[in-house]
Image 1 (cartoon, rainbow, N blue to C red):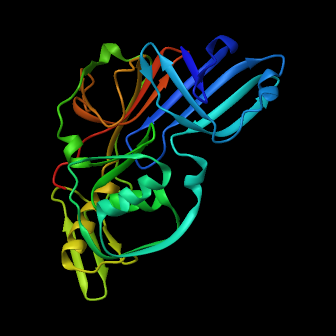
Image 2: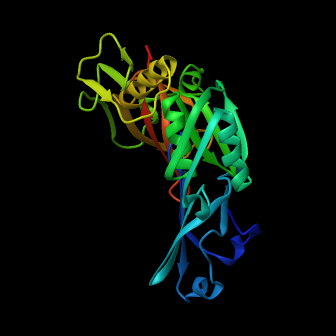
Length: 303
């Protein structure tokens, strides 16, 4: 395993005791935690700082550039925790746009941080007005993505925006059998927090989206800006999807497999209730333990 710190390979100068990458499908930043044996307090003398860059290379798999977010020293140990977003991305901003398209806003935010923008199956909607009210840029953009049925992922100095339906419809990249599971597993089909319909209203504009076969209350949304009927219809459907997509979830561990990443589909076989295609919501690679943890959810239909 190689450790790249501020662009320099420092592997030979450290003893890594833990390296864990949390790869999220979107909506929240990826993270990296690296622990070092530090019996002589060397790391403090090197004066690592927040917003330094760190990257792991494990047998050809690269974590992508992460930005140091937290530093911790214990007796004989030093810990670096990093995120895929830089420190300046936490700044809250207030701004308004008029007659602006979705991708114009996304490009503006990407350019602010020197990030590349990549999109998959995105409709470039036109908005009469958008308001960012005392929000961090990526928090604001992630919310706009949710309203449109999209997901925002920040990885390796890139902003990636994709349509969830597009990704869920892709073929599974791998079949994982019950015999591949390492230890216990858990699959849940819940009712709490699941809604039969979502109603979006804003003055005279109203739309309700229902899904057949789902039991539960109606989710009423009246605190978002809606300027036309088409927006209300999209938002109702996509807010309902956002809440209901975690109806069926699962978690298990396998031997380290860096070929798996968040946002892909896999096939489960031999378990029972979870057999079939599953979407990888979060992948945790524990390099020093040689383990990969998968947090899954079932793809949605009817949204």
